[in-house]
Amino acid sequence: MEQQSITTKERLAIPRQIMPAQEPEGRNKNFKEVNLGYTPELAQQEALRCIQCKDPACIKGCPVNIKIDQFIKMIADGNFLGAAKKIKEDNVLPAVCGRVCPQEDQCEKLCILTKKRESVAIGNLERFAADYERETGNIELPVVQASTGKKVAIIGSGPAGLSCANDLAQLGHAVTVFEALHELGGVLMYGIPEFRLPKAIVQTEIDGMKKLGIIFVPNAVAGRSITVDELLQEEGFDAVFIGVGAGLPWFMGIPGENLVGVYSANEFLTRVNLMKSYDFPENDTPIFNCQGKNVAVFGGGNTAMDAVRTAKRLGAEHAYIVYRRSEAEMPARKEEVHHAREEGIEFLMLMNPLEFVGNDQQWLTGAKCLKMELGEPDDSGRRRPVPIKDSEFILPIDMAVISIGNGSNPLIKQTTPDIDVSKRDTIVVDMNTMATSKENVYAGGDIVTGGATVILAMGAGRTAAAAIHEKLMNTTAN
Image (cartoon, rainbow, N blue to C red; front, side, top):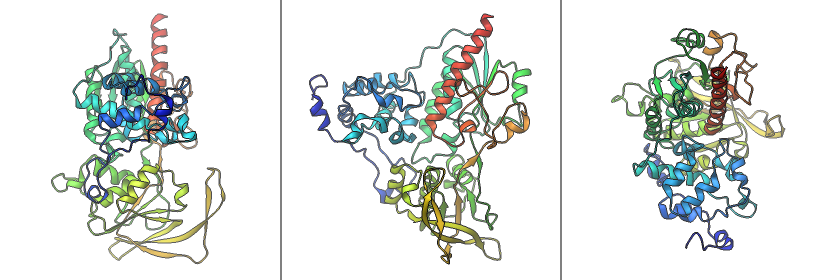
């Protein structure tokens, strides 16, 4: 069906195209990517569903304002490389965002088709265009402007730092990215499992940035091996962007959290994702042996889903999600919950842990839980869980993973006291520029907002880059 000849009525008759995926019984035993991506035929068919609104609301739902209508039209026309190029005008990590962004709560939520039908699969189409560009080897580097003679330091190589670095490099600034860990990519590398975001894809994106002249320095812990003041006063940087994320895990503060077998989701996923402990002893970072064991993950977000699905792949006989509200209140993406159920994850809803219990050797043996029911909504708008009297029971488990959120990296605060922070220890910024209280220092991503999404962090990085560029150029002009 020709793009030019198809009518709106014919577009509306096309059903949303389902992305092929590994079968659940096979994929819950391997770390290969679950979703297999659209074929060119499926992508074009899905792109034809877009009715090309005159004022596309979907763009307003995108934190980096991708020209969604334009790239989708290019896919419909078969111009796949053009589509990838169009996306990258606004999004430096399209293959990543196409996989992990909650499009259903952002761009797709505002698609006009949702009034009577399913939205256009914008995220799936973004992923297709980026994958096509990479797999065909036709990655086109953006034009880099003439050198400004200015140096900018980026602390953290996660989504906020990468997007800020990319924009500044294209504008002609000399950019150096400092990363605390031995691998680059931040949460994209250590926090998201291989089966949801293959690390080779992240590496390809970073390799492209290196070709722009961006310098990456791993194993550089800001606040320890180098401070913000040292970057500005001794290393000659004209501005600093802080994108260190929110990597300080929260625990529940209940008895028994120090038992052997109790992990934070951060530690568990970092060991498995970044340090490849799923391949121990070939890789020398061990992880708890889940084979044939009972593993419970406490929490209901995307990180909890990542952790419990990882435990299942590591051989857990029973892999539980334990959540104190009902499934309707869970913040995890519906797709992740659906995939988890398909893979045999067991959901224990309306349960709240009171304490962890162990044996004489201090090994975890169970979680004492209390059954709950839903009461009136709380400040979050979700119904508050209320305890059911005399409903305590012991859930036999060998391993627990706590996934209830993260706090801010404390090192910047400790070593840069003149940067204002909130009561939650997040860095306070002007949201229009991402400028902090310290001259020529900017911040964005989870260190500002608390735990949020990849694309929101990237939007903050881009906002900061524009403000840094304007400030540095005005300084030069004066």
